[in-house]
Image (cartoon, rainbow over all chains, first blue to last red):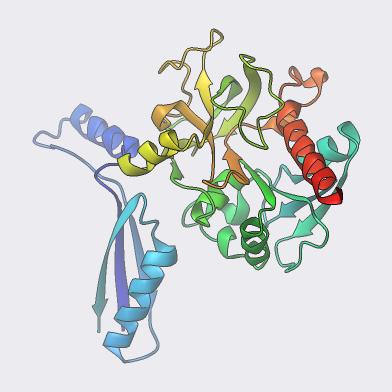
Length: 80
Length: 237
C-alpha cells in the first residue's frame, strides 16, 4: 500500500518559482499556459493493510508536519 | 545572565552568537545540543541561524520536532525570553511559537547584504534599548526570508504591535526597493502576542562589533539583557 501526497502553495501565497517556470515556458514558445504552480510530491510506502487507519494517520501527519497549513495545501491519496 | 544557544544538525551561526554574548557582551553562554531535554538555568534561549536538517522538507520543519524544542516551548510558556535568528526564526514559526511563515525570497535569489531595519516598536524586551529613530544596519544571508501571514494574522500583528523590525532604506522609508525578499509589510522580525518570543531574518550577531561594519546588532542583545536584569531586580525586591 502506498500514499501519494501532493503539496502545493496556497493560492494566497506568491509563487515566484511558478511564475519563473511560466515565463521560461513562454520564452521556449509554449503558448496557452495560463499559470504554473510548483509544489512537492511525496510517496509514503506503508506496511499496514488498514486503509482507513493509514488515511487518518497520514492526514494528521500532513497537517502537523508534511505540509505547513499556513502556506500549503495538500492532497492525499492511498493506493493499493 | 545565562544564554542557551541551541545547536541543530547544520546550525552554523551558533558560534557567532556565543562569541557575541560571551566575548563581546561578557555574559555566560553555552551550547545546547538539539537532543538535550533540559535548558538548565538559562535566562534566555537563542535559536541560531544555519540550515538545520539541511532545510529538508521545509526550512525548520524537522528541527521544530527536535527533543530540545519541547523544553523551549515550556520555557516560552513560562515567560522565558527566546530569540530566533534567521533559521531560528523559521524554526520558531514552524513550531507555532511565532505567527506566520517564511518562504522563498520573491526574487528567488539568495540575498547576502547589509540592510537597514526600522524598529517598529521599542515596547519589547528585544527593542527597548534601541534609540528612537535609529536605523539598524545589519546583514542578511538567506534564500527563504519572505515573511508571509494571512490577512487576519497581519491585521492582528499590526493591532497588537507585534511587528518589531521592518526593512527600510537609508532614510527609514519602507519601500519595495528596500525589501530584499518580498516580505509582506516589509516585515523583518516579529514577536508573539506575549512579547517574550521574537524572531528576525537579519543577523544581529554579525553586527555586534564595529570591525564587521556595524555594531547596531548588539542593541538587540543589550535590550534582552536589560529586560532580564530588570526582571531579576524586581524578583529580588
